[in-house]
Length: 622
Image 1 (cartoon, rainbow, N blue to C red):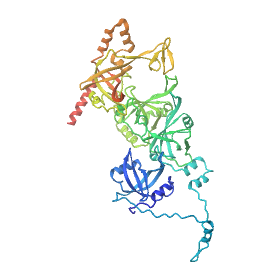
Image 2: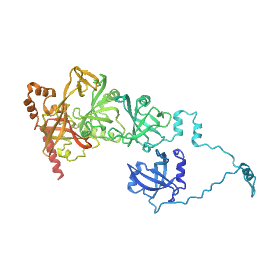
Image 3: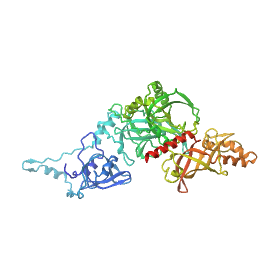
Image 4: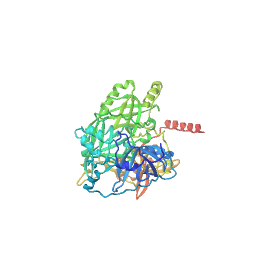
C-alpha cells in the first residue's frame, strides 16, 4: 500500500456522514496531525492534504498509541466512523470506531495543491441548444438531460414505507457499537441484548412522586451500558423489556456515569424517555454476548461490606433452605426469601439470600438440585454485615446454574477432587456470634490507626473499610449522645404541637419515641489515635447499655456521677472494630470521617491464631 493519503478523503467523509456497514466502504487513508490526549481518549486532526477534520480515536486504540504504533504525522486507514455536529458550532467531529495503522510518522505534513476552480456563468437556453448542434469530428454533442437527483435517504425512505418497523430499522439504520457512543453524538441506533433488568421502584422527593427502573444492555462486542427510565418512560418500557431479548434502541441521551452508583464498566450511562424508540429484533439473527463477570473470592469480600459497589461470585452450593416470607416494614408486604450457603476454593463459605422472583424460580431449581452440589455464578450482589458477611440479590442480579465458563469447570474439578472432603469455615468466623457485631473476619484485613490517619486521601471517591484492634480512650460526657427517633423508621422526630412526636419520614404523629445513640469517642492503639462516630447498635456494645437506660441513669435524681461512671467503665476496654473511612467537606475543606460499622469483643483464641500466623508470615519473608 502506498504511503499516502486518499484523494479527497475528508470530502468523502463529509458527503457520507453515516456509512452503511453492510456495503464495501471507500478506502479512506488520512494523516494524523496534532495527536493529543483529551480526557481518557486521544483526539487528532484528520488530514487529506487539502482539508482537515477534528477526530477522536476509539478507546481500544489507546494501547497502540501508547506503544507507538499510531504516531503523530503517521497514516491510518479509517474502516468505520460516525460524523457528529459539535454543539453550538458549525463544525463537524469525526468519531472513528474502527481503523488500522498504515504508516508510522512521516517526515513532514502532507500537503497537496488546491486545483483551480473556475466558476462559469450559466448559459442561456438558446445558447445551449445551439451548442448541442455543433459537430466536432463527427461527434454530435447532445444537451444534458435534466435528471431529478435523489439522495440515498430519499430512495431508502420510498422503499421502506411498506416494511415492518423492525425490518425498516435493521435495513436502513446503521447500528452503532456501544463503544462509539458519547454525549455529543446526534442520532444513533444500537442493537443490544438485555442482560439485566431491575425492579420498578417508586421514589418521593421535593418535586413529587415518581417511578424508575434500570436495565443493563450488552452489544455483540461485549460492551455494556446502564440505561435508566423515569415515570412515563418507565411505565412505557417496563413490560416491553424482557430479559435475554435483543432490541434496537434509538433516541436516547447519554451523560457521564456517576461512579458511585454505576455497576457496569462504561464512562457513560443512558437515559431513555417517552420519545425513545425500542424495537425487539425478534425476526433477525440475534447474538449472545459473552457473559462478563468480575468474580471476587469469598475470603476477599470484606472491603465491599456495606459499600455501594456490587460483586460477582462463583461457588459450589452447599445447602439451600425452603422459601420463606419476610414482612417488609415500610408497607407490610410479604417478600419471598430463600438462603443458600456457597463455598469456593478459598475454603470459605458465605450465605447468599435470594429475594423475590429469584427465591421462587431459580431458588426452587437450586433447592431441587442441592444434592448434586451445583456450581452457581451470580452477578451484582450486595454485601452486608449481617451474620458477619452475607450477600443479597437485587432486582438486577442474575444467577446462572452450572454455567459453561472456564471458572465453573475449574471450580467443579477442585470440588470433586478436594473440596467436598475439605473443612469449610464461614467468612464471618472470628467475630461475636451476635449478628449485629459482624463485619467480616477481623483477622484478614487488620490495620493500625496510623495507617488510616496517616493517609488523608483515604476514602476519597468512595468509602473504604478496615478492621482494627483498639481501646476506647475517651467519651466526652457533655456531648449530645442520643437523639429522639421514630419507632417505625428510626429517623429523627420533633416535638409535635400539643403532644407526641412528629416523624417527617412517616408523616405521622406518635405519642412515644425511642432514644438512639449518636456518639463520638476517641479510640487508641499502639500506633495512634482517632475520633470515630458510632451509632446505636455499635454504641450499645461499647457502653454496655441502651441509650434509654443511660438517659434514666443521668436523669434519675440528677445522678451525674453514676452517668459519668458508666462512661468511664466503657473506656480502656479492648475491642475489635470494623470501620469505614470517607471524606466529608466542612467549610470547603475535606476531612476524614471514620465511622464504626461493627464492634466485637476480643476472642483470645482467634487473636492468638492471628498473631501466630502474622509471625509465620514475617519469618517466611526473611
